[in-house]
Image 1 (spheres, protein in one colour):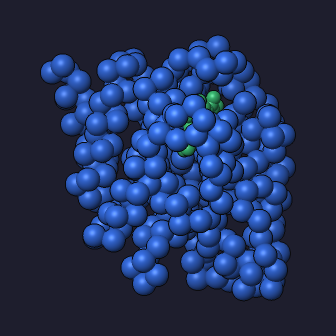
Image 2 (cartoon, rainbow, N blue to C red; image 1 turned 120 degrees about the vertical axis):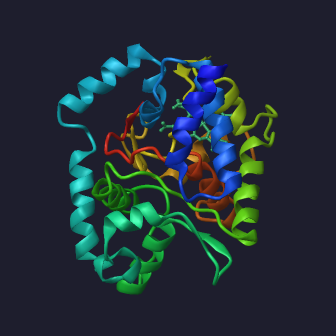
Image 3 (cartoon, rainbow, N blue to C red; image 1 turned 90 degrees about the horizontal axis):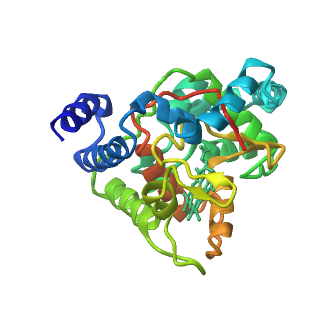
Length: 271
Ligand code: HEC
């Protein structure tokens, strides 16, 4: 126990500027996973299920050794970023900084702003057309933006009463039971992390947002974090919620904050 506390305290400084609530929630989560898998290093949580399952990790590393199936799409996203004039929007001028800044709570609108939300608004401004939320162009461009920030750390800030309320709604949603099976996100990604669910091994929630948008073999393409939320909600037979809605964004706000201090990575392959 003493050792566990030392480890958790050592990680505490990484959380840095985040408010006390976020820091203590994350400390609890890290402590939980440290007790569950004492040999898994904090930094390894960027690797999701591969941090817990040596078998699928081999496959993952083989894929990363070659040309990952998303490489071309991400490159295309970089070209599209310029082609559609997204580099002209103030919020996206410095792509690496944009990845690190989002999601954040905007005091002016009293809402969480996600990176994809900014991409949609900027795309509309520049082209007069709507951009989807889940896959295709938005996922390619967002993945390219994320790649510019690879190696930097997730650092979601939750400051002030309204930001805390948004964060708390996301947290309550994550831990709340719903759907035909009466399950919560946490039931799978906290309490049963590392265990098998049908053909899959359940990944820990810690680090879930470090490699987004992710490529999935099942999708044969890239998808945003919120696309993935939609998929899990469907598997839970829960009421769907729209991508980029306030509730989805608050869920993302909480969920990303739980990855504070972990490195953003371009290793975005998942089954
Ligand atoms: C019945 C179990 C179950 C529940 C409940 C569940 N998921 Fe999942 N989720 C999975 C499985 C299985 C996968 C694929 C294997 C893995 O990475 O865990 C997955 C993958 C994910 C991933 C991708 C992880 C990665 O490393 O890329 C995210 C993000 C995620 N889930 C979020 C959620 C959220 C948010 C909720 C609640 C709305 C939720 N899940 C509820 C089973 C579940």
